[in-house]
Length: 141
Image (tube, rainbow, N blue to C red; front, side):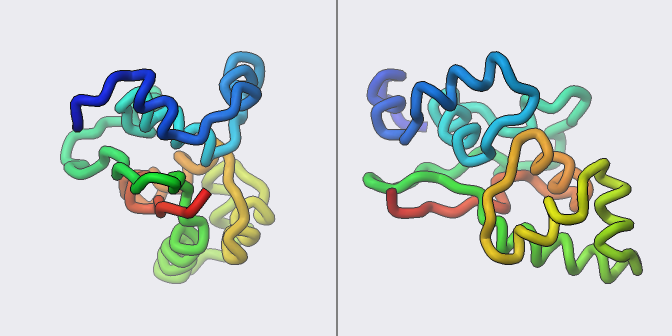
């Protein structure tokens, strides 16, 4: 990590006050907003999942993004990985959704690059047995 102060890091990450405020009152948060907070805090997404072990997940830290960019979940890549695992396990999308405790549409809309929510995205990456950082990308603000 670099030596920037917390306020310098915060100004680098697109983080709206409403996103931060919502974290305190909702059980679900917009995934991309959570990524910005995690970058600011220098924490991994996995560090907020009760009982999740980061042992063996080297490289799970979120990547730094260039100026004028924001870190987002790469939901197309996540969908492709879910689909590959779904086929390998011989499951339907309904079967995957059932195992994850999610609605099938929350999985299939990822194919179009739709947004995802936290902590639901963590259920998906845990099911894949991969770190969340594997499914992020830098996007121009």
